[in-house]
Image (cartoon, rainbow, N blue to C red; front, top):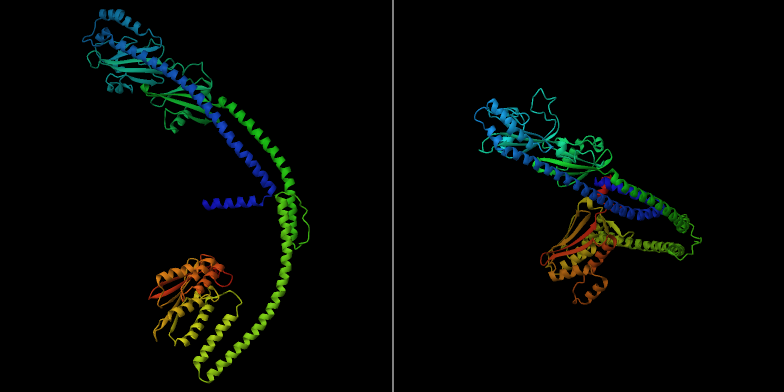
Length: 634
């Protein structure tokens, strides 16, 4: 994924880089205007949108609270009616009859007690039914109030009411068929009701029956089912089973299914303390839920935001159109201005094309004092300097030819010297002086290596061969007490090194290592090479007397000091104390050619060894290509 993003960014950068400067300036100008306008507009419209939602939320929360207040009042009416029915002593005596009343007593109960009780309870027109269910076999049914309890034992709420032990249980039910089966009634009562159910335990705290008080849903939730409402909002009642009740004739319910509202409510975790918004068929809606805990149900107020947000959308569209017109005008103006400015740059571009073709003799007709005029002035000075450099190059080429002639003369002189050494070698072999003959061979090779300086870079193989010749000559002086061990894998023999970079290190090893040696004691010098990352490490180690720690720190410090500090430090050295100038020269050459991350470092242990470590980039001689890359290309 990251690689894909980088590739896309690279392609975009390339495409932008190919655009003309004029187009880049116009696009940047548009972005400078468009981005702030977009951010400010988004901030303002977002604030207007949030304020609109906030106002609508407050308004509809107030309507919701009014409805909840009405519901609370209706609940109190039903609870008072239930309490009056339960506390009527004459009715309770009848429900607890221990023997069945005769006809005369029943008629008397019907005409006096029951009639007055029925009139008293039904004085509230919103109460749909009050029913008492008893399982006392001595109780006769009196329609429409007193019934046998067997009629409701199959109801889903029956056992729940008994378990509540006299506490009120509320039910919101749809199409609730009446328990009365009487042929004189036109049809069973069918409709949506809110029902209060309660077990009758008065006055002896024993089960004396079930009380049922019902109110029609449209009377209980008057505002929810009212036909006089705001067409952009509607309230919905949802019972504990998830069944929704509302006025289906309202316009909002014609376009928004109740199932959609319930699904959105479920998405938001059924939180009744937070309103939420959703969109259905392109129309935004605001839903304000509220929990009606006593009824174990929810009351929703759903508001259409289409009309409320239309003004916001109109203002937004007006500003967008104005912004587009403004950007178009500013783009046209900037195009004209940039054309005037870039005209001078085009003159410079054409002048550079002439230079690329080899034409250096022309005039640049730009005399303005702005940045482009300054650029043209420097370009004229560059042309002047280029013409001077061309003249210098011609003169230098002539001088080079002369130097080649002198070099040829010196080469002739060196051939004379090589031939003389060869003659002396042959004379020594004839006389049987083979040691002198071998020394002259090594000396000739060293001189040829030193005098034929055609490049600053040589193969490690050549540098090591030169060191072998040097050791061969020095062994004549030290009676073959010098031992040179070269431990370099063949694969590293083509490594690029600076010419004459190892000899000063080996000379130091011989000079300081043989100084305190007893007669016949050998000095071993070992040269190792190995690869570490992108670098090659060349170690030159001897088993000499080593260097004291204080002196070793000073040598390593002097190798990398600045010239002024180094000269000052040399003045402070004691007579005979080494200044490390040979190692410093080698390190400075390495840093000059390869950078400060490469160079040499000295390690030593007094009385044990001295090791000089040279760090170089791992490169083959041809073209400076890493050796492992060359192997892969083969």
